[in-house]
Image (cartoon, rainbow, N blue to C red; front, side, top):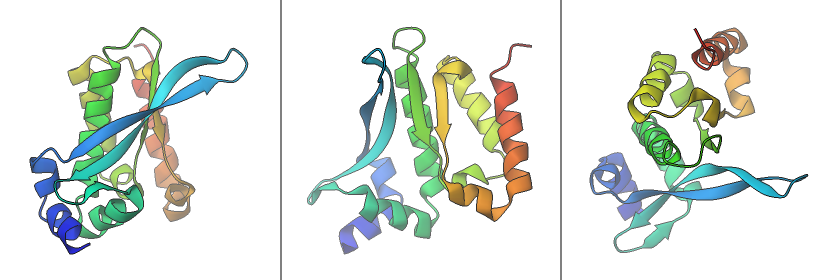
Length: 152
């Protein structure tokens, strides 16, 4: 997949709007009601069509574009979710690299402010790997993120 690697490593996929979000419903099993959606990034290559995440996510991680890709996904998901009925949640995955970036808490607070999405409607999904790297730092970030959702 040389073409995909080239598009991602140069940032062209972001610049040419080849990335899109698909929304997978989150259903409360007791009530069988949709309570939110998980945002899933997808790459639509102009020639190859849909490229699976297992192909383009590692390329984005290796090329250093996972942070801008993750930030785009977070902002776009929050922008969309802010238009949904009150209380509807949006779940967004954060890569370990994105989670450990020095300004992640400020960036998330900024995205929430820019989009008008209530912090209570945003669920951030992280992998276990985040805890394995530096659990003290991870806990500190999680506590800071929790404070964003609390009323002052």
